[in-house]
Amino acid sequence: KKIQLSFKRDYSNIFVLGDRNKIGQVITNLVKNSILYGNENGSTIITLEPIDNQILIEIKDNGIGIAKEHLGKVFDRLYRVPTGNVHDVKGFGLGLSYVKTVVDRHNGTIRVESELEQGSTFVLLLPQ
Image 1 (spheres, helix red, strand yellow):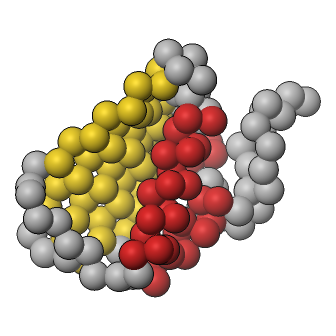
Image 2 (cartoon, one colour):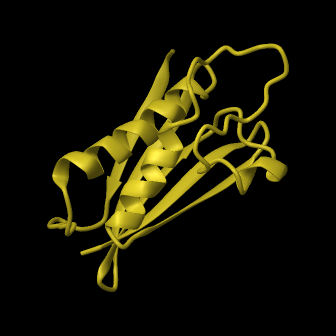
């Protein structure tokens, strides 16, 4: 897909206390999802910003979005948002569960904001 990927960083030295590989996998998973569920010629914006003693990592897209009734379940293990009989994107429902586990084990938080056809924003806060 043709997706415009943008990166915004409001600070020159950002450090996260944690496992570099695991945090990298979290970000990679969220960016991949934004591409997989994004629209052709869509966009994904990654933002890093220090807030107090934490780092905000935000991954925002303008893809297909998630209906409100599914937002509370997207981090559950093996949960996939129902798409009827069409499964354009293959998977087992493990990616966001893994993301949540890694963020929790780093004493961070993650939440998602989304609307159908408007896109999704995943917001992580991790200790600095």
